[in-house]
Image 1 (tube, one colour):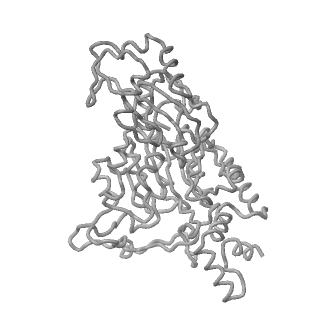
Image 2 (cartoon, rainbow, N blue to C red; image 1 turned 120 degrees about the vertical axis):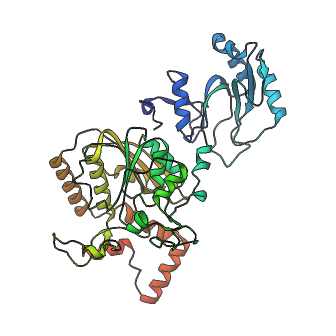
Image 3 (cartoon, rainbow, N blue to C red; image 1 turned 60 degrees about the vertical axis):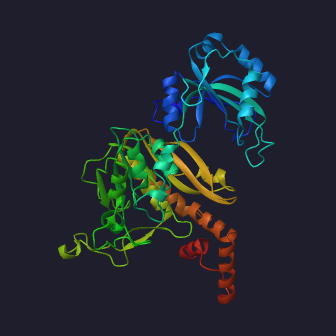
Length: 469
């Protein structure tokens, strides 16, 4: 996750003695401080990594624990000629300078160096977690910690990439923090190529480029990735360029941050890739995606009501402004295509990370039904909740086997047949029903429709039943 070799195999244990899954305090054994700093530099959700000198449920126990810590480990940081600073970093509570002095005094540590509040050689944290003072935070047991800070997360990165300051944005541009987290899961790093098959205005590509990766993007809308939009009109439409040339596009975002621009941006879609003849199979380091699964409005793929001959070509005079027609892109088909893309184009060990819709009520079933492919192994999944009802699930897969055409074809045929034989609605249909039933505006709309027409509105579930009938 953090670009450090085998970091995902590290053993993490709760540090506060409780069983709350949302505890912010964890112990981990690391080989050296260099590794700790490398993890902290990329793990945006890790505030800091400390060498723990002691912890206990109360201040008295903490003093005893710190006193019992290996003297050879403490002495170099307490010695004369050193500079130090102690900060109070209590969970969810701000403290003042009086608390710092009392904490240092209670610990009884023989600091022989000089305090330096601006540029100390050694930084220490005193941390107390007491959720009685912060009832809105996870209910972890009261616990006290003291340790030397080895590495800290650089949250200034989020300010640099804040969408409010970005030149080129769309309505679904991924926020900076999440894009950087996804680039981490894909292990974006120098020497590799990261692909986003739904790149839009390039938020995920910017994040991958921040970590030094080369990038490539695909999007079905030529207006978004080729033409951009006016830089001077608020709410300007994609594909509408300013007459004076003051337009912005994906390339503008990379120039804004001084990042290496994408290797290529393709106009195309996941269902009909324009990459078959470019020799990319087995070469990508990672794939990051926020698919348009659409709880209220589904994704689109190339196609239309009128079938075209295989040798059809867009007339030369129309190519510059032509916008291909599209057709609905079923949720399950899109997942199958995304998994197939990863199985074909990732190198062994490469990562695919993307979002799926998720609910708080049906989590176990959703985990059981996560997409699968013979060449890929599920590594991680986590649910980000928007409210008490639903959210989105971030999943990450690793390519573990070379791509085999026949094995992949058979697995896909079996998955399609299993879905066709099932009477249960798929994930996106269950999510739509959940949202329509729970969101007040949707509930009112459904009630008005049924009152006027005498039948329920054609939501995803009834549409599917009609189609099957």
